[in-house]
Length: 189
Picture (cartoon, rainbow, N blue to C red):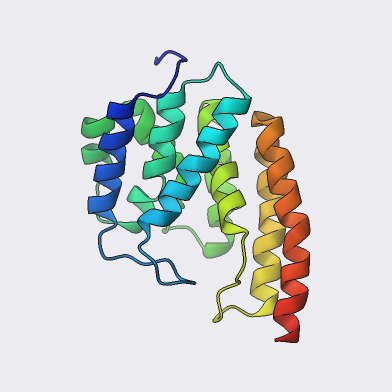
């Protein structure tokens, strides 16, 4: 088991490079910017939380934040990730990944159940991910109903994982509340 302590620049750099290579060519759906910006945002949100709530395994949290979509959205296999970053990081990233073999309506519930079996640092990454994703603008190809379901799903994530971080739970709650204003503006077109 890894020890609590501050994140290390070498681990950050290795995860950043690995994620950049794995996600090369992928774009964010709204602004068509390189997808790596999303990963950096989740890492930043995670690092902000670690600053507010010290005493965690910061390397685990930061590496999982940077790598959280590698198994779900790229061709990187679990074994390659485990060799590069260790079993604990790989298990965290796997828990953060939806199981595409399940019906879409069951994927988030399954992922949340697997995340809850992981260390607190992995819970924080999921909270940080949804906090970052609840920002305007809403993807133009989404309906208001889909955007509302996404916001409601954020409430489920908060209810299931919010105990991991009071700081991040408050930030996600504020984003959920603010998203209602974005939804209203989106509906007016």
